[in-house]
Length: 261
Image 1: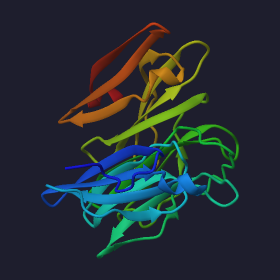
Image 2: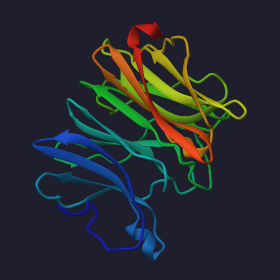
Image 3: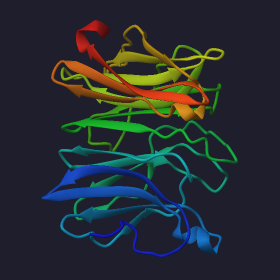
Image 4: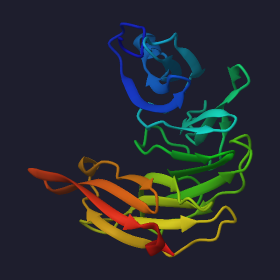
């Protein structure tokens, strides 16, 4: 089948996300081919079936190391990522399928986070019909925070964001719908030599449930990004238990969604 990228430059290509499309998948990734000549990291997409279709540029200047995330709405796919403005403002952008093409990048919320390097802390998105939720980490404005924002029009517009963390966030978010119209957010909360993985239910009306501590791990980058999935009435959390520099394990925890009420 071959690689997603159709160039041969010795540059980074990665942070791939997928959504189902027709009898294949729609892929999104960060593509560094322009950096070979001093340019910027770009966001690209291609349809993948029996072969990889031609790539398209969705945004020509994005953050170099923050992951992408994608979801399918009733109107088509959406992808979220950390944008990179001309003044190094790195807020969360979204691109949507609109008819036969793609929209320009719009910003989910104006955090006004100016940072000279990539924070390696990407957003997450979940969709149910035309309802879209986006969760992300930012250190703009009043300082570090994990936020969530909701859309009821397939990502065309978003309401004001709400802070969901407990005061010492490290980010590394994930996000799922709970099956009854609310979102469940996971993130890392800091604290000395250990970090806590916390979950919280958030309604589209921005009511917050209690923050639940479900696991502990290292705050180091080696502990990676915890992943959250929902199957029926249960959540499944997978994370790297990084005990020390020489040992680590991948752990999985089953969490009934009712336990977060």
